[in-house]
Image 1 (cartoon, rainbow, N blue to C red):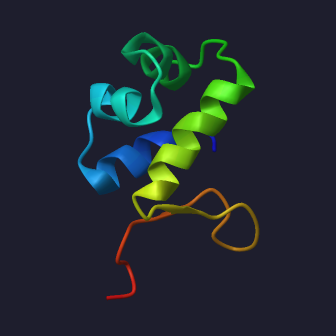
Image 2: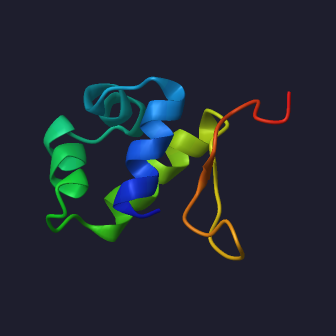
Length: 76
């Protein structure tokens, strides 16, 4: 998950940075630092991505739509 995808996923869920932090069991400061492009442990990024995926967000890593985020229930 890249920074842009993180922001898009939060927007799709209507989550604040604090909401993501709580869901991922990381500090709000960790989310803020990551989205600001500061250094964050890869394990923390993975935990945040997993929290977003648990809510139904999908991340597109390759192909024409690489870098996109698919919000939950997008096919409905």
